[in-house]
Length: 419
Image (cartoon, rainbow, N blue to C red; front, side, top):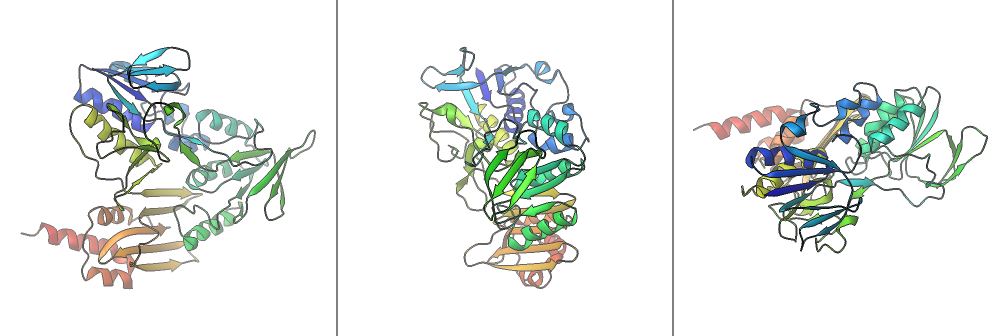
């Protein structure tokens, strides 16, 4: 049997490894669309800051890994899928057949329709090629403007700021990381960044970019609130969308992502999907969402591979979980961090020391949380939410003092193990 995996990010690479373990004699083809070996985008900031070389971003550091495990690796772009013939059409004009197919094509960066943003010297920070350009052009004193302060934008911020540039952030939301943090927490992160010498503009957006000839800084940037900002380098970090264009005419159903069932199967027989391109089950809501985070991608890849190999494995749903380091300040959010209808919450705030903790409850079950400047509770928060532990009297204790999370977790865990 021949298994083909389109996409060489974490979902695809994990799936290839699981398939090899479960199907020792089967043929496996892994297709990646970039010229580098499979790598993790989440490692790019470490490359930018100089903590690792390019090789340190690779998902497998052994150069012969794929060959040793008899996984054929092909650098190519898939342009079309023909499920009737069970063939993939490649940009080169060649085709590749399959028996089982996994779509793990990830996402691609999107840019807002701003006049001037099409300039080829305006870069994203999504690929290693982008990172090379940024590393080359970010020198001490360089004026850099970053569009977007979402998850990816905040990850790369520290690496860019560490080069000694004059960094300005423009975010259209009313706070930083608005899809991960509430107003209180997002604005504490903003204050932290400003304290570190980064200029942050929220509740506005870039409306026009002018490239100036023979004048420095080379760009004049206009914002919605009437400001005019200058920059030598513009980095667009304004979100991503699932990569789906190659699916036209394939019959694979999509709705803001590739629709999959609990076994990671698409609407077309023998075609599975995983990672940032897939609309998978959300643990907290039971609904289906695209969770563009690496833990979900690797989990998807593992479960898809098991099902492709004939080991029936239902997907219980991925917990929406983000842990972020923004210029040295750690923040995290879990599950239904925005709260649920009819639920209540506990909150602890220490603005002076950039500490924040908010717990969201549905009845006596913890369903979501946010934390800032507090890392000791990360494992406990995830554990309590995923186990859907009934806290009983501990709920009121946590509402009085949210820092008692560890005590609550240990007490409930001990009670569950008693005979």
